[in-house]
Image (cartoon, rainbow, N blue to C red; front, side, top):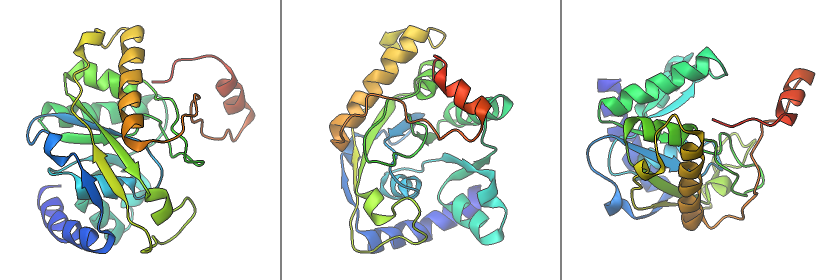
Length: 233
């Protein structure tokens, strides 16, 4: 990613700031070096552009491998810090987790969405425990992020962003989750996740959904799986 990312960030970041004029709060709280996890609410496709543009340091996030199939889209997503992964469960999910862990071990910053998928109604949903697991396992602090207005700039289904609205990006104080216990403890992961989501809520001010944001089931097996009690990771 090195050269492409450096050149792309040098071009796209000031351009995006000029066009969208994002309001950025709390930038001084972000650690300038070392491993860090940005944990954010998720309202729009452009969230993964807003965070790298507003952050005071390079940020990497995972994106669907299909985004990298065409030359221009591959350049664009590489330029904003995206890393291609195959979405899914099982081995694909483990591979994505390994990629994030390697980035953190190298002292990089990664951005993740604890809700798992975009909120279609603007409410803040309960967090899955994967972000907490990664933080507890690596010892990386978590910087909560509250995004406001990205769903107005580019609503779900829109093909092009609107220039009529401005977005706000709020960075919170870094959170050390180690006091919750080891990553192997389900109780520790759940409590750490709840602390992360409370910090995101304080920044975003969204209405709480008090439920998980489930992707609509497309087949009978998936509908049965969603009906069963299970821990979201």
